[in-house]
Image 1 (tube, rainbow, N blue to C red):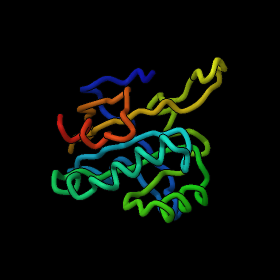
Image 2: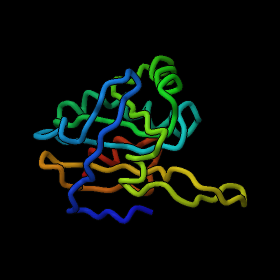
Image 3: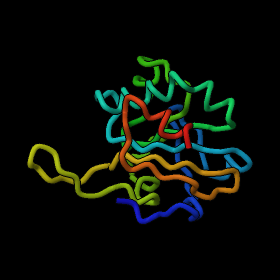
Image 4: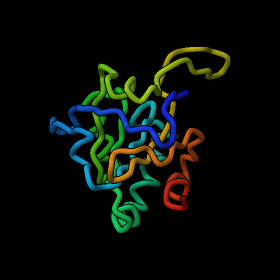
Length: 151
């Protein structure tokens, strides 16, 4: 779905997280960043993905990664999801889809024969210099950490 490629500079972004803090790509200069886009907080697939990242969070930290989730959900929905599942990483509240569109992960989807616009589950791994080093389009929600960490 995305037109971004490995080796491209990650799009600059600025958005609020679930607590109202402003988060920008430049906040992660000198750090590796995993930014995962998911369709909707508290749904089974998204919860499996986020909990898999949560369960392997110390491995990400040990390898120098920060993790950031992004969806078009409200701050309240994001915070409830964090509280319910013990997520340790911030979730961007992208209700206007500025970050989603910057990464070009919004578009037509098909589910049960119905076509609609939505967020394509996609993960970007960004290096310390803001360059995309991996893009995961076929996310395995229950084993997503391995897809990222084994590269």
